[in-house]
Amino acid sequence: MIADRAGPMSFREALATQWDLALPSRRLLEACVAQGADMLRPMLQKGAEEQLKHYLSAWDDVHDVLDVLTEAAPDARFTPAEFSSLMRALQPRLYSIASSPRVHPGEAHLLVLAVTYPSRGRTRYGVASTYINDRWPQGTTAPVYVQEAQKHFAMPADPSAPMIMIGPGTGLAPFRGFLEERDASGGTGQNWLFFGDQRAATDFLYRDELAALMRDGVLTRLDTAFSRDQTEKIYVQHRMRERARDFYGWLEEGAEVFICGDKSRMAADVQREIARIVETEGGRTAEQAAEYVAAMKKARRLKLDVY
Image: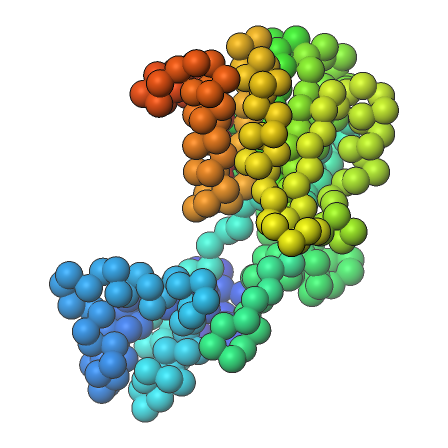
């Protein structure tokens, strides 16, 4: 038995439920170097931060705890207590609630796709996403908590204000809740959704619900971008460009713009496209367009929930 933050438990249980096996700690790397893992030594030196970051987080070549122990430090030996002190605690996973409490009282709906990807000859599995989708024993509970709503990503205070929602993939989650809330509360503002994923046949999340919202007039406009359904990849920012004149018209009418999803590429691409639309459709210089977008952020008319 070992003592962990959740109390005494077996070493096996700690591996399964308490420790982050995907992201090795610096303490573990240093302990391995102390036992002769010389290949790790250069990336722990001052000035090698980028090399270490790449070793731990490169999407196509990520190294987890098992990789470190089998490839870089196969001769390292630790007692259970020593190993425990070298591990990172498993951190909570945060998911946007995909439902309106007005429509589903006492419930919180989540949009969770199981994360799996190959790396270094093994298939890696997302901890929470695969547990929720594939491994959660029926009839059992799991530790969850509700984090206070992000005020910077709240729906418009004015129920008549137009909303433009841009949410590829699971970034659609909060917008399902937004649309349910607008429908249930009788909000009169127009609602425009940009949604994208890989293939319409398999990845069109909430397809029937969105179609019903369109028929009922709750969802004013819906533009989709399925990147793998044609030879040339098409993303949500391309649909925005195709609808640039109308998009700019909505901005000038006071629309609040929401972006949810991938932080590293999608969110940056979408913001650049907004600035381009303001520049071309508004007859502004690039500097003026940048000021326009900055003013939207300051006025909380451009809101991001990215990860």
